[in-house]
Length: 91
Image (cartoon, rainbow, N blue to C red; front, side):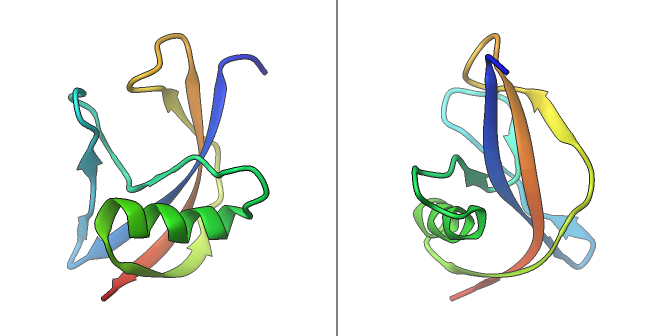
């Protein structure tokens, strides 16, 4: 599908609060994560993105079932489709 961007995300929930972040030059808040690089598995991409964005490690739990799509925050005309894992941060 043209205009579809696949991403991986971590749902970090602590004391009933969800960690979200905001990309530079956008008002949208989102779960930490990003686009897999060629040859990466989704979980490898998730670990790399968390290291790059948050500077820490990750312990992934279960992947959430469902279809998680939304308009892309910084790429007009595109849709983001996310795979989301419940996770804990380390380090």
